[in-house]
Figure (cartoon, rainbow, N blue to C red):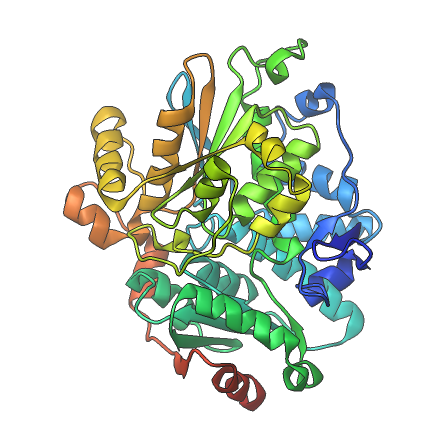
Length: 440
């Protein structure tokens, strides 16, 4: 796969280089130079295949020049060890459950795939790789668990102190070993800024083979394309031939709870390959700079605000640059595919209770935001696919305050909760972060 920088299309790289750099030298994000566009018949052949089979087919299409057949098989075998089932609440409302991995969040897909790819790189090149990543919640857990005890890899997770749920925090601060958690006295936006500053710092880059596992890394987005493909093709009617509506009597509208917008960007990339989705809903909490852009045509980053859907508390989403690039900075073109919507904590809480009482289905706060977007913006002649990004048990304070008897805590969360927190407090300052990276 050949890629270019969103900052300058003349700045190109192969896949391995793009993954290892994370960011392009000019500070841009890497995008695929080309994507194959597949006909409806191709997607129909995927209908009854497993998630891991669909991942392998996608990687064969996109990464045949970057990994051998045996390596692509190894990567999908190691990464896709759990399913992403679709639960239908009614005939036109579906939930894609992305929380069946080891850390109960959608980011397990990208993190485990990236860990498998990094293992291949490390084995080939004999290098120690240092991963620096920021988290507002689930990324830290997914990356830490995906890379825990991986040979030749060290991980540094930056997270905002007091702004990650206690269970989320325990999931990445209790592992130890090659995982170091930096508890930053600041916001998630500060953490993202510090990660980018590390990549621009010559002293750090000279001392370490540096990369990142945030959704700014293209290796995170490719596996996330897979579950869109899995869900949409799985919903296809048997034997459909008509191209209208992508083969659906009711075309699909995907509602995506969005923070840093990597998840939505992955869906847009799959759509560019021909995946039959009518449009997407960018559903956010009170941090709604992208819905504001979609409705007004102006993008104004803002300091992030805290909410109960904390993994979406992002005031300057990195992957918005990829979205702009994908649509040639054409506002009208983007809004033809994407609608924006945002909801506050009161509405989110009401949605959790509404879905439980109406369907007997329990949603976490992030998924509830996606549900609200789908309920508001999916027409009667369409069907909504809501991305459920985290298990509700990861948010016991919120869920228990609303539905005290509904929540059941999975075993992996009980184990994490019993662990001892290990973190290094740091100021939101590059010097402080550099000191930790160079001493460890």
